[in-house]
Image 1 (cartoon, helix red, strand yellow):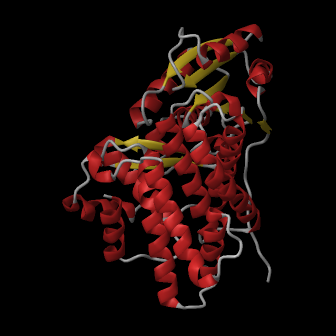
Image 2: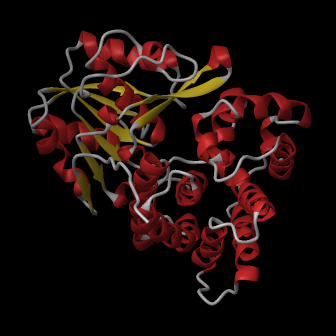
Length: 394
């Protein structure tokens, strides 16, 4: 059988403890004035934002700081873009979690084009294609979650339409992804838990996606095993550097995998859920992941007891539990049970805690079906199945 696929990633990935020290010299090669987009702290608090700004100044790079608060909206991108244009920034540095990296990614892309985010957003925007390489930018994640340092889309909220959509193009990939696991050591346990569950979810959805291919499968299998073992340790002890390194790798692999394979029903729900309720993205993913895995496996088995994708769900159970000897008739259930127990162990809130009620299920399902992630789900789930998933997560 011949397998055909495209594969995209950042031009360069630098991974390792202490890597942040290279930020100044790397940025100086790209431009003399940088927009530093961050949600990793307050300038002047002596934290990583000050460290990054100091490294840039030492390398002769002028710095304009833009703080991203919460998940980015169209207005946030417009404000950051206006700042970058007014200061004639030649490069962008994204420092922080996925929200900061997505903002930096969008600004980098739009600086090289006319217009604003709504001109290029898919689904709810005008959907124009980006045609020029992004202004060179550097991604520096401080959490292990979204893998946004190596993804080719920036997720942007459109509150007026109750939806999140993507600015999407391989032209948005960063010039450099600088991944220093030590930057996550001070991240609070709750943030570590929900961002880590996002990474694990992305690995699982990319592995079982309709768009999966050999390279993404290899990365996903490695990342799933790492995350299953390291995430509880990183939450229990933020100073566990081995666990932080494994989670940084898992998040990195998840970003590469999803960029090339797509995701699934969990992320199909995540966009409208996050846009209509005050639910952190990682919390949505964590609570939806076990019932979506169970529903997908059941739907595939209903189509055919020998469906080829069922073997991936069996392998998933073995990867999660670390039990390579699990027989086929127990592996899927064991994987789902592992995920359910992990979500409880990490004390992830239920979606009902954020106001999601049964009367909100139908509109959420309708919006989820518009999401680009839903088409990569390994099987088409009925509205009844999707409603059952939401009930389980609430």
